[in-house]
Length: 257
Image 1 (cartoon, helix red, strand yellow):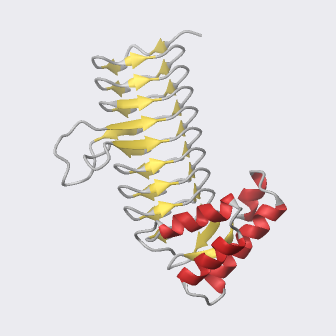
Image 2 (image 1 turned 60 degrees about the vertical axis):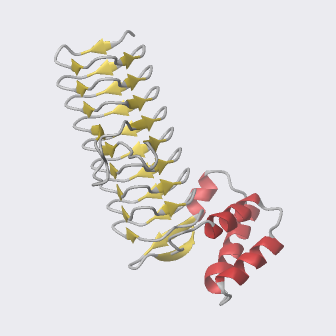
Image 3 (image 1 turned 30 degrees about the vertical axis):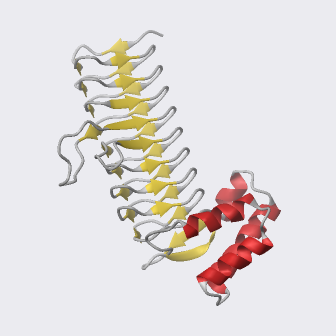
């Protein structure tokens, strides 16, 4: 299959288009955009300057990728959006480019952004992340690998969501959500570990039990957070999953749910 670009597509200068790329009608590709091999871009999309799209991505229709950030401090500096391989971007998704703070908005590999999802400037979205319809990220948000945001979830700027975490639908996320947990409620709270997701991804029964025990110390034992972390370090000093939880919590600047 050869590259197939509809005659009604508008393509700017210094655009790099890989092999076997398909671009539908009335899509606008701005200057200095890179599109990887095998990527399909539907109709009525806008891909703005300095955007880099990986291989075998699917971009449906009416998406805007790489538009200027909604940040009053932005002063026209050269920044970008980078999208990994095998990522699916559904209808009406918006992704804004970075600011001077980080320079880039990053979407990983095998990500699914469902209809009307929004990724703001300077975000880092890890690999295999799913954002259900209308999920929204403020600026500078970091989403770990395999995390899932349910429909309408709204994430405050600078919040971090750990790997394999699950956020319930329509909830506000104002503080960091550590790895492997389910977060639900208003205000958002720890709702147990993401057992179903962890099972699907090959975490053993022992792994899941240890994660659950560690979080019981942190959230439900009555210990002070610092005491709970020390107990987790002592009891699970050889468990990389628990140590990743400890490191995540200790690095938090916005606090933990």
